[in-house]
Length: 165
Image (cartoon, rainbow, N blue to C red):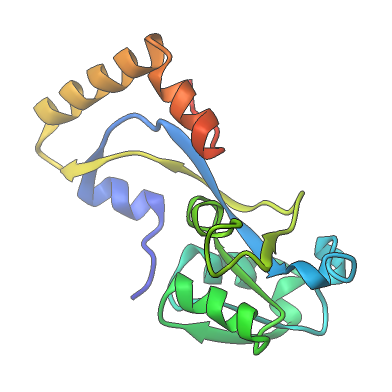
């Protein structure tokens, strides 16, 4: 499966207004934090991402990351397992997923997101059938309400994502 870029999607779908920012991030073992502290330090390594994902696109687009041995996996969680097991030194995946599963209460407590490396910034919106403008308008009104009353901002702070205001 290949990720369709946003311009292609806009030709085939109607979208709500964007409400939160996302990005692709690099995940490593905590034990390698000193070794891999910057994008420039990520050379001569094995790196992985989900096949056809924005993470794979981010690796291909980056001058440093694209020079590494690349392994494609079938799912983002598989990329985390590759890093955890040591078969890859790093993986690139969705920040929202990484943030949700890398913590002291999961099997991925020995992994970390490298601070300061943000790849392939994205915006989240809700997609609808192209002709469904009525629903898009209703959803946009709800997004506006959630922005106005602070609900989206509170959720963004809770989950560590930037809300688009």
